[in-house]
Image (tube, rainbow, N blue to C red; front, top):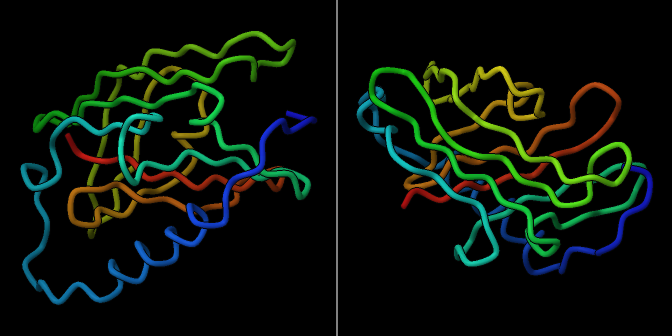
Length: 152
């Protein structure tokens, strides 16, 4: 992604640190188990407090504003189903539309995804915060991803 077409509003960016701060203040000493986390999670333009932002070379792209979405079901048995969609963000400007069938794991409140589709979702870790999966990470190549998936 070389050219970014849309800047993210400051109000959405300001929400990410707040969600992360809430996670840090969790006083619940009971360890999470897969059944606590299992469920359907969504980031799309119709879902309140959902975020899907890519920051590359100082440019910010709000993928949800562009019509993108992430929908993933985390099943109690450790399997996943779902869809990753990013219109026009492929190498040649084509849509990215990937099946998120695969597996997920939970380790000390951190959720990781493993699916055949070649998406950044396999390269980041999500913290389980209330009814959300929250990630704010920079991965190889220097691209930063801010994602908040909301449990339905």
